[in-house]
Each structure stands twice: as structure tokens, then as C-alpha cells.
Length: 141
Image 1 (spheres, rainbow, N blue to C red):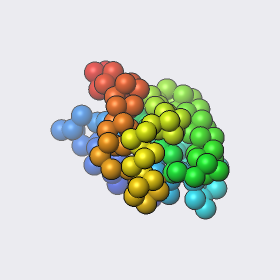
Image 2: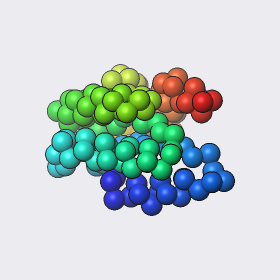
Image 3: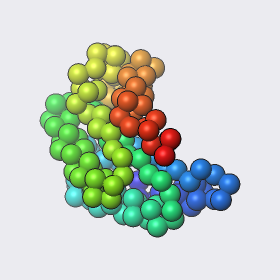
Image 4: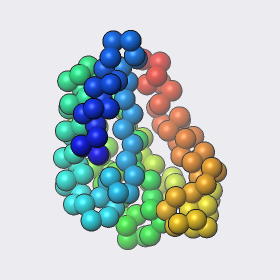
């Protein structure tokens, strides 16, 4: 996550573009696996600070569930930490974990695939959460 952001943000800072970046984090990026949660939180803070220094408008979508209760509890705690980092920097943040844990399309489709990644219906549920979670308002700013 932190390694990729510099180059991608620099591209978004080109004068002809709208200068917006959405950061979204999956299980492997967000510490649901072997990555220490503190490392993920520091990485988010770093990428937000670096992108803001480029004059980019930022939006953050929290991590989705991974389909295992103990890992999802860890993702929920991490999402709360991400929300705090975003709030400190006045960056809009939408939490996905709790709503998607309760989403039948997300959970059923993920369970019938690899246990983590849903099909189109699950991603449609995720997209709806992002849209009603402030994304459209952010685009209008």
C-alpha cells in the first residue's frame, strides 16, 4: 500500500486532472493477515500526508470483511483506527466492515467463491455504501 501510493498519487497530481485520490484497502493491505495493525495505520497516515502535500483531494474507504469472524473483528478495529486517522486530517472516510458483514450479497457470494471475494452483487453492495457514505458529496466539492 505505502510503496504503490507515491507513484500513483504523483500521476493524479498532473495539472490536467481533477486531483482526487480514493484510497481503499483490502485484507492484505490492511492487516487482516500477518501485517501488524500499527504498521497499516502508519502506512495510511503516511500516504494521506504525502498525497495531501501534493494538493490532492482525498477520500478513504475502509477495509471490507474477509469472511472469518476473528479476522473480521481485527478488520473492524483497524477500520476504526483508519477512521480516526482520516478524521484527524479532515479526509472523508466510509466504513464498510459492519455493513458488509451484514450484507447477504457480500457474505453469500464470498462464501460461494474463495471465502473473501464476492461476485458482482457483493461489489454492488460495497459501491452503494461508498456512494451514500459521502463519495458523491466529495466529488461535488
